[in-house]
Amino acid sequence: MTGNKFDFPVCGHHSGLVKELKALRMLMDEREKQGREALKIAREDMERRLESMNEFRAQLEKQTKEFKGITECRLEMDPVRRDVKDIRRIIDTQSGARKWSDHIVTVIIGLIVLLCVWVLTK
Image (cartoon, rainbow, N blue to C red):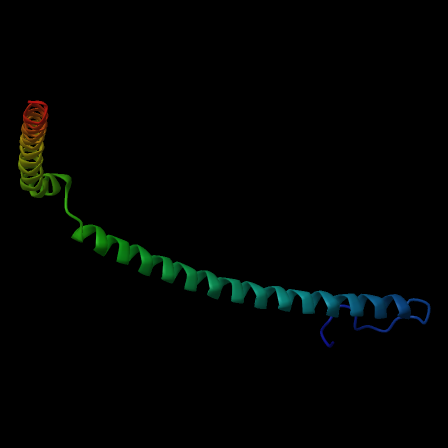
């Protein structure tokens, strides 16, 4: 490591300390390099995520432009509501007529049974 502040002649007593400092400096340089690489990868991942989020946002915006407003929906639903009311009224009328026709048939059957009983008992 030329140009490093630890490249100078030292006595034998401190040479071990200098070796440890050089090893520590190399370890710190390696960790700094790994940190920069990790930061670069994280930045690229974040940019991809932001890009996909922007695409998703654009897709949602496009879809919302195609949605109908509440006024349009109400205008389209009014004829359907009228048709449902008409159908409901027809069904109610028919079920009411059916009740009367069922009642009349029951009365006629009762009269026939009463007539049969009267004829058989005479």
